[in-house]
Image (cartoon, rainbow, N blue to C red; front, side):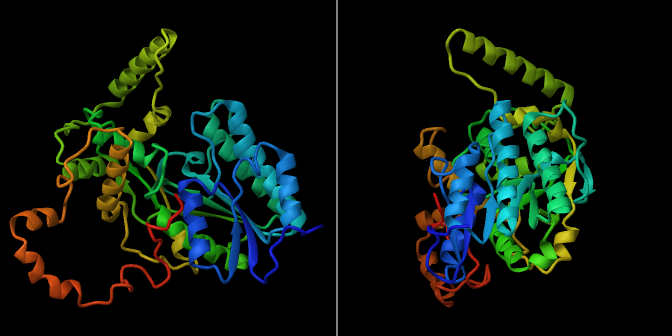
Length: 397
C-alpha cells in the first residue's frame, strides 16, 4: 500500500478524527507539545476527511498509512437519524475496517449513554439494543458491538474508551456540563431538576490525552478492551449545582428538588411552545439534553476499578470537577460575556480567593505575601507532573 503522503521521519504517525472538539482538541495539543519527539498526529477537518464518505476515509488513510487511528468525532445528540448513523456508527465501522487492513491500533471514544442506570457499573454493562433507544445511544451502542465483533472475528486491535459527563475548558459547544453551567449563569434554572439521591460520574478532559498516550504504548494490556475513563468518585448533581450557585452568589435555583413528574410536564410544555413559535417563524429550539431528563433523576455511576488496577497512573489524582470549578466558571463566563450570550458579570464578582477584594482594599497585603509567591520556580509546577500539564494558552481552540 502506498505511503507517498507519509512524513519522512521515524516518529509514529497517527490520524485523529474530531480534532476540533473538546476531547480531540486536547489530544491534538498534547501530541503536538508533549510527545512531539515520539508521535506525529494528523487531524484532518471534515472537508478533507468526512466520516460520512467511505471514499474520503479510504483515500486519506491509503495516502498516509498511519501507525494508529484515534476517533473522537460524534454528532450532536439531537442530530437526525441519517447523520447520526453515518457518523457515529458507519464512520466508526469504516475506520475500524481500515485499521484491520493496515494492521494498526484503533482508539475509539464512546459514551456512558450506552449504559443503563445504576451504581458502580462495570465495563461489561450495556443497554439492550432496541428500536426504542434514542438515536445517539443507539448509534454509539451499535459502534461498540461492531468493534467487539471485529476484534473477535478479524483480530481488530482496538481500545474502547467510555467517557461520562465531560468537564473541561475550550469547548465551543454549549452542551452537557456547560449547558448546566450556562443555565445557572443565565438564571434560567428556577429549581433543582434532580433529586437528592442522583449521582453521576464525571470525566476530566485534561487527563484524557495522558491515557491515550499510555494506551498506545501498552497495546498488550489495553488491546481489545473497554475502559471507563472517569473520576473515581461519582458526584451528586444537586450538590454540584448548589456549589456553582454558591460560587456565583446567585439567588436561583431555589433549593427545591422538583419532582420528576412536574419536571417532565414542564419540559412537555416547553416543547409545545417551541414548536408553536417555529410555526409562526420564530427560531426556537429545546435544549437537546432534555431528552435525557429522566437521567437527571437517576444514578449512573461508572466503576473506575479496572482503570485503577491498570498500569496507567493518574497525572493528578486530586483533581475533580469541584477543584476545577473556579477555573471553568471563570473561563466560560468570560467567553459567554464576550459573545453576548449572557449579561456581563462584574469582573470582580467571581473571585473565590478574594484576591480582587484584597487588591482594592488592602494592596499592601499583596506585597506581604510576595515572599511566598516567588519562593518557588515559576516555570515548574508541582500541581501536575513535569511535562503533563495541558497549557490552557496553547490548547487547540
